[in-house]
Amino acid sequence: HWLGCLLLAAVFIFAGCSEGNTDKKTIRLAHALSTSHPVHIGMERMAKLVDEKSNGQLEIAIFPSQQLGSERETLELLQIGSIGMTKVSSAALENFVPELRVYSLPYLFQNDEHALNVLNGEIGRELLLAGEEYWLRGLTYYDAGYRSFYTVNQPVESPEDLQGQKIRVMESQMSVNMVRELGGSPTPISFGELYTALQQGVVDGAENNPPSFLSSRHYEVAKYYSLDEHLMLPDLLLISTLQWDNLSEQEQKWIQEAADSSANYQRQVWAEAEEEAMEIVKEAGVEVIYPDKQPFIELTEPIYDQYRETEPEFFELIQRIKD
Ligand code: PAF
Image (tube, rainbow, N blue to C red; front, side):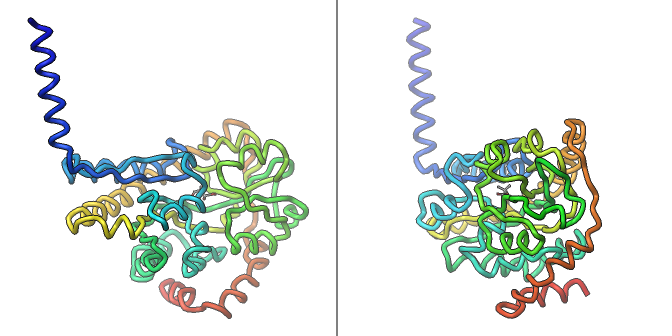
């Protein structure tokens, strides 16, 4: 009769589960990074906090590695409410939320502290919420460090070395302009397709931060990493406004608090991950170059002139924070 007991117990457990979970909501969060990436780890923390706060009633299901599409595609899915959340680079948002183009100005921030003051301050918040009118509500920023060039065939010691090199950029007009000003040939490709593109010579190089260079395994193909640190683009965690408006005030509060707290945690994880990534790629035979940044800064100045003419507002506010 132990079998009978077991069956009875199972019936109770399942009944309990389904009863307790009738109101359970699941929000799908899709992004392009692999699960070892420190930004993914930040999102896992956020999902765990939401689970705890809601007592298991609100679940954030994470789909990494471009499983549900590229950054542009996940943004489109968010706008129509097919998925609830995503995490993208601010550059991927340029075509959706033009105000965010300001972050794509090369060498915009003076240093880490300047960046943090901007992102955590009033301007950062205003820019985070600028996407609301396009159905993309920003929840928080994740640290994505500095982006630098990596190449397959020859090291980039100065901008002249970019001449004739096809460089992968995100789907961002600002990044296209930047690489062009520096003398390279910009080629927009999604992150998930880049490994093969580097391997097959579709592009000669790309640009990214150390944890992305490592976790994508691009360093297996691109053996030169030139730390010119031309961009410091934040990552943004976003929720579809269609999803947001469907949540109770309490649920919105849980998500916002979990997002904020995960961002603080992620900043700590980032610093370590960046250092570790540099060590691992060096050990794997990547040659690290520390170029003089001045020629890169000077060559990208026309981008400021173009930008200032059309939309000076945020740029000037960000400059003022520095002072
Ligand atoms: O290079 C990109 O496409 C993005 O910066 C990445 C690495 C997917 C993170 O958003």
